[in-house]
Image (cartoon, rainbow, N blue to C red; front, side, top):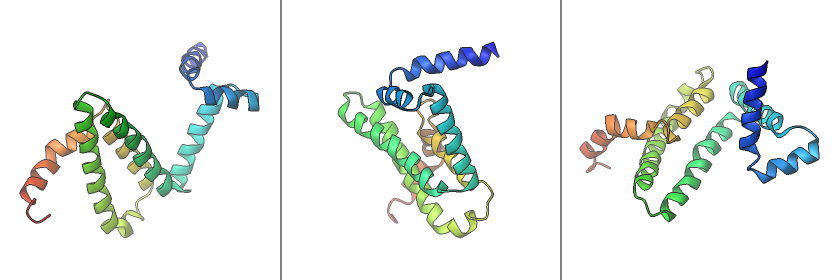
Length: 149
């Protein structure tokens, strides 16, 4: 139980930097760490049950990367620009495949949970999944078919 309490304290110190959570905590009289954990759990339930899962996956796969892409454009370093350009190429490729296979993907249980995990793996700078996919598969495929595209 002490380990859980210590993790909640760590989470609280990270959440103290977000002013909107301070207001939510005051309005609800619930600790902000419980609000965030409850919201995350609710989001996972929605995704696993399929309630608005398509929209949630699209928002998560688009909003954070779009924000980080805008930050990359404004920054002086070039490495982050490349990372987000590669993410958008992978995202578009994945979206194109999804359009044509949607009628099959509909029948896969927990498809949107898998899609969310894939998008998070592809977008997060810690995993650099999009770069892995691009370097391993897409780069050669796109160069080979550049004239057809």
